[in-house]
Image 1: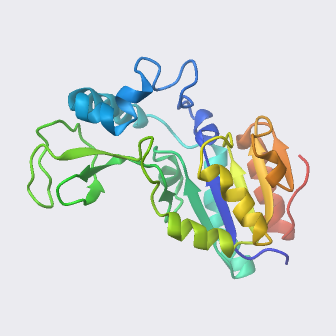
Image 2: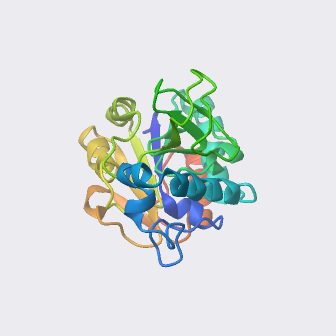
Length: 244
């Protein structure tokens, strides 16, 4: 069997099929606000109420969103691949939604943070949070008031868990990138990192990404269609499907 450890990167494209608008598209979540007002720390300093309200609205919108067959295929692969290969399946997502968790995937690395989490700027602890936040929210860990912010990695901030991600990429032999544009770094460089370590790299997208040259090949179309077929074939044969 040519593969043991698999790393999967997911981006906005996988969640778009579940009705979550793609970031900064014409109908995107950020449409009615300037990005610098709601996705940069300076915007939070200028108007924290606006930012809290913005992410409260996004959090509420998640409640009725359900994972699609692509999310479910990842969960199935994570559950069944170790039994077949003795390896592991690790998931890194750029998405701040909870659709992977709803699908049953475990140990998801949210490199850009999570909507269902809140971060205290006083004690620097993040914890699950499902209610509305405000400038009056009190930290349940240290008791500080007015120090809470969305647990989101904004522009100009360092993504989470980069050391762990680098270790996973250096030890994987199959890297799958699903629904990512290839324009947002550092995630856009993950395929090159994995390939340098000898991994086979495959992208799943509606169209070729900006970093298509760093992949061995791509499977293009809706991930809810292409990915389940790929996973079926991989679990059955141990080989990567090259066309759907």
